[in-house]
Length: 457
Image (cartoon, rainbow, N blue to C red; front, side, top):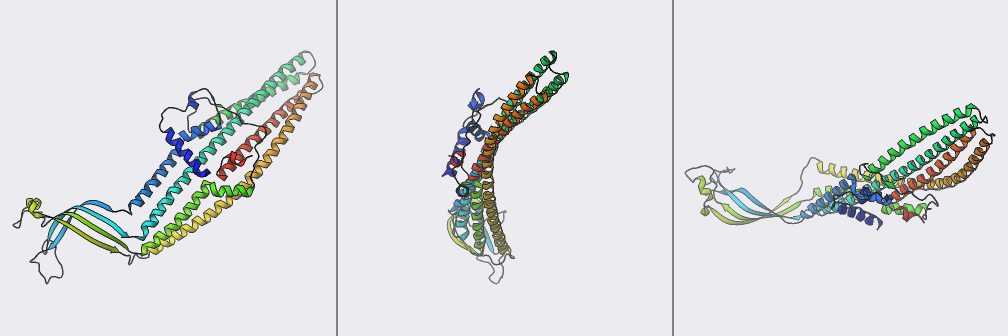
């Protein structure tokens, strides 16, 4: 199954990476890394995944503890025992320890085995569900880390492309500044054009610096998403901007995938089952518990705590004062009166179960709504990308015409600058649609609990 495969892969990455203390080759070598490399680095370094792995280990130990409760329990034991004295008063209603009885000492092994406890089986089942719940939560953390890497990756690429466009715009404005000065010196343009060119270069420089700062922030966010320090420059592979991958499943089919593979849905279903078992566990508190206890060891006849006429303290440890003994007892306990505590715990467990049912219903409704929204976003962004391509072509033609007109002394510098800005704006709109498309696709894949390649043709 996809869910089990993803969980196994994430665990394998953690176990493998824990064997090494050296940095990832992707970080130590000057080479280009792709999105998959960034995800692998994140799965090796992110502390949230390590915490989730420890939670899984805790759930496994809880399950082992619940299984151990079904086996025999053997302890070393030392305890006092009492024997009725031969000269004890028969008409006494109460036996006074030490007066009517001899206090001895037992040392040996005791074995306890529960022959009937209706809670044990259900508690073991509850612990088993807890293991599966920890796996689902581990997968949820894994998916969250992977999505955050994808989000930071796309935003970083967008900031890089924006920086390149702002640099290109600045270079064009600088060229126009040189051109306006030449035209002014030749008497073809007024001094106002030179002033406008200076303002345009200043504004383009400011936009370029803003883009540089944004690129630095996005790079830092990518490092954080990968769980590493930003001490090295990463050469990131760009993504394909041609032919956006279309979906091959309908909304209903993706909803079915989400119900099967979404870790949040699986976790909530397991929490619901866990709450249902807790109701049964609390109900079983009304029934008896039967234990059988065996003891094998040695027992002293009399324990002399003080030196008396009957014996000395050292006599307690003489061999003739000890004899082998084997005993067996059976105990049964049944609740008689708990002040309504048992019924209250049952009611609380039922309320918790109802709460989980409602939460599961809410998650499924939100899941369906989100899937529909993501698919609508993908369709709209695909249309925006195609429209932006047409606008880019038209903007470039207009900018070329404006440039030629200005050189011939027909158009104004303001028209030329606006035309150049129009090209940049259309290219930014196109890039924004592309990266938002990939981000929405990543959101849809995360919601469905599968990879993007599974959803696309």
